Length: 169
Image 1: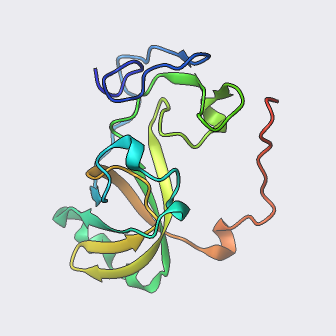
Image 2 (image 1 turned 135 degrees about the vertical axis):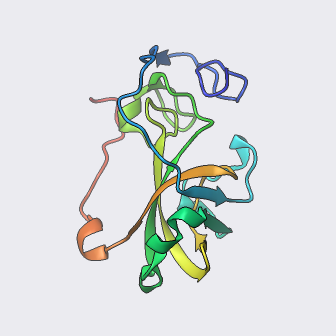
Image 3 (image 1 turned 45 degrees about the vertical axis):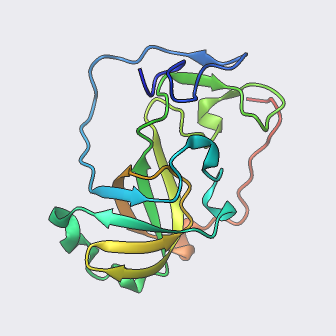
């Protein structure tokens, strides 16, 4: 089954990884408000993060939500929240290719997680109707869009933030 550990989507379990069976019922419902259009159709081709690409991508907002784009053009950057619909959902411990050992899912930015919500801070290049042109995405073409928020450097930036990369918890 696609999206589950060991599925045919290139996300099979690596040595040292652990997975969990997810509950059959969901706690919340979501409405996708659009789709992200990128040049990448295979996981191996996606950049690891939006800073690793200059590709111009599009955000196609469903017409039902287009009114919510009013005044968005005043923002130079946006936060996009999206659903990594092709990622496995049961991984609790992962073995990233770049790491010297396994890591807990919640210490990673990997799309493989119980709720595969991802975010990118993107540069807004232009708006035509319900379509945004942006730079800074790192997801597969057709990824469902959950939300759009303005990026405020005054409240969203944390210049002193750090992440310790040792095996410590």
